[in-house]
Length: 159
Image 1 (cartoon, one colour):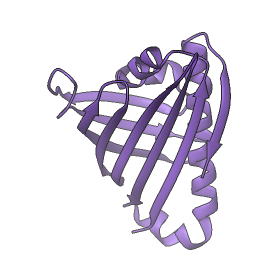
Image 2 (cartoon, rainbow, N blue to C red; image 1 turned 120 degrees about the vertical axis):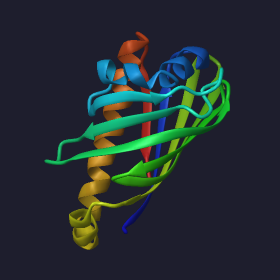
Image 3 (cartoon, helix red, strand yellow; image 1 turned 90 degrees about the vertical axis):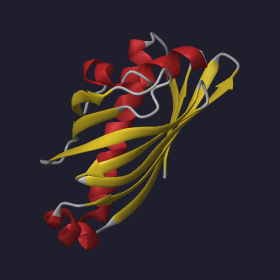
């Protein structure tokens, strides 16, 4: 399996409470995040969402989709969320939120392996394209979140 360690940082001129609440409601993501084709709630978690399970289907600019589940394993309100992915991607995703006055800095870490055979076979040459596709989807997420919150996306970075 090909492994990826991807980091995205958004800086949004909106309070951390509003940003965090939008990210905590993935069933609504398809309405504002270009690239999120479907989110299905499979299991409810506790009052914070720990234990919840969602199935996501994503589509970037490249001609393929990825479907996987994410189980929420850690929630620190207004500060961090962590989930474990299984399916066509396997690994861990972590959201971090930092309040910087009138703005919020969101850091997303995605450490995953691909399980699609064709992606693993092409990874030695296509890795930069797969990363570019991921970065596109994440940039669109930042833009969509800013529109949803009637705010400005004042910073976007990726690694």
